[in-house]
Image (cartoon, rainbow, N blue to C red; front, side, top):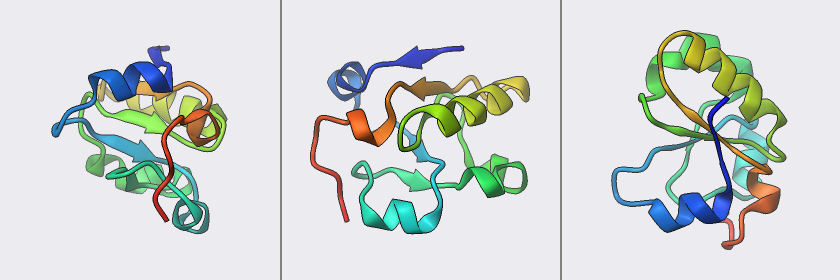
Length: 95
């Protein structure tokens, strides 16, 4: 499964980088990566069309995002899992 370390993603991030947070809305509201979009894992099969090809998938620790990455790649989205999730994100989270 394609994966990336948070520091590497931060170094290569630009205005066109899509980060999809698959945590539940209450978790997302408590703190998330700046400019990330919330598409909860529990809704992913219904909302998969909102995830652009090439997106980076994040959750709290990397477990749910790994499941989401596996699913999305199986349908041709070519996404990448962010290892360690927001708990490993070295920048301040947005609330």
